[in-house]
Amino acid sequence: MQGTNGINFLYYGIMWNLHAFAVPKWRGAGVIINTRAETAAEKPMFKGPLRSRRCVIPSTGFYEWAHAGGKQQKDKYLLTEPGKDMLYMAGMVDSFKDESGGRQDAFTILTTAANDSVAPLHDRMPVILRTDELEAWLRDGAFVRTVLERVGPVLLRTPVVPTGYMQTSLF
Image 1 (cartoon, one colour):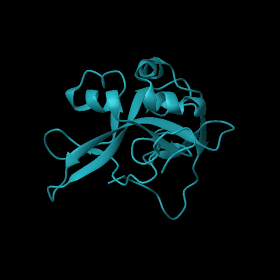
Image 2 (cartoon, rainbow, N blue to C red; image 1 turned 45 degrees about the vertical axis):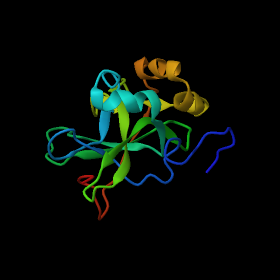
Image 3 (cartoon, rainbow, N blue to C red; image 1 turned 180 degrees about the horizontal axis):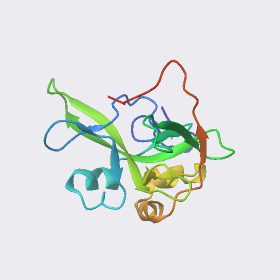
Image 4 (tube, helix red, strand yellow; image 1 turned 120 degrees about the horizontal axis):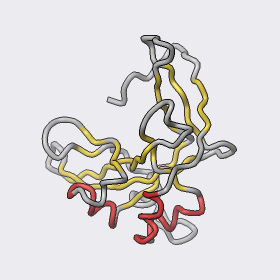
């Protein structure tokens, strides 16, 4: 699918059709969901994708959980950008051999130190891109360092009222 600015939105642009979330760990069981922005350029597993396979993960927000007042049950919060319908997270795509021997693309979300709006819930947050930065993130290698080193935007924390369904784990 070709975007209006000539950006390829299939796989290496905005993740419309990529269905594998998380990259298998280098050795051992499990997957890598997030990648630390501070060290991604140094790690052999991530420096190639950071250099040439960056992506944008669109969302309406993300969730964090927190223990409050000694309660055993965690409270769930939805974090969003105030006044915006979409939140764009910086990510990277990598390819790995799946169980059947074929190649599979998957992505990870780049994270950075939490700013003051997220820190009460967690010490990390996604690297968030502004709408006017999407093309530069995908195409301009020099722009990457600027994004990875800055403090993220202030986010709105909205408590999520429990319903009959509660997400306990991604896997």
